[in-house]
Image 1 (tube, helix red, strand yellow):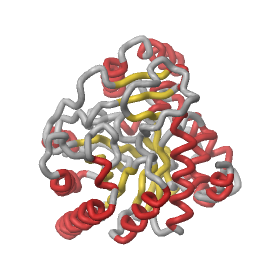
Image 2 (tube, helix red, strand yellow):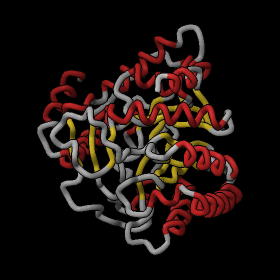
Image 3 (cartoon, helix red, strand yellow):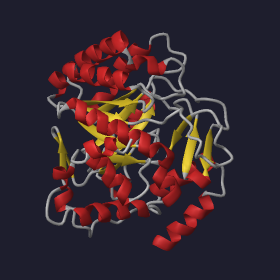
Length: 358
């Protein structure tokens, strides 16, 4: 099966990115794509984030399955958790195509998708047919033409909260004009205060804990990052996802699509997002949890996220270039580092030294 998937991946790379992705979704639903981790010993890789238990740290980030298409097949992927979305209140088509660009020589992607989404009602219909066994989260975002971004997030929290273990508030995509302003000052206070009110209503009504995570931009400066952490802690946000894509372009990029407008993901984002993660971990002093995202392409980079302060980690772009085998490779690598101790003992253990390399 590994060789079939390898040839399948090569074929996908010959197709336009969005067509290749649609085929991938169908392949997962037909059980053609899977990652067999059942025989792996992950006892030392078990981790916990609040009330949630994870068999190992590795999951798939939002963006991979925007419309909850694979909800009944994720048990076959070998991951410990998955985040679906970004889901918007109303259906929207996103930005004009072409809007996704592979940078093969950099193993990176630039996208300016703009939250294409089938909307809340479609998501709820699929989520109500539960067949999954691992924790899932829902990544939420506002409609581009919305008159009230904050109200969009409250509507999404209220309607989607019953179906997830956590809601990730995505206020850091560079592809929706004005969205990143919600990461700042009074906007963030208002947003998180009101989301907490909706969360409390849901928890009281359903008798369940709903975690709230916040996905942030890697392009924040140090003061903006510290302020965001402090505000998040004030409003009992459970975790920060560091990070979303970047608008920064290093002069080391060599692919022909390097000048395309949009958010950059993959290995060129790794150093920037990992250093931000380390800064956040040290500033927070264990007052909030962290999810490490950005540039994970093998076991070593996955492990580095944990050393920088991530309790769990997520990948997406790495799957595009390496296929599902990367899931096994990462879990095996992490297991090799944890023969004598639990992975939780490594979280943030090298945050200082990572920053010293700046």
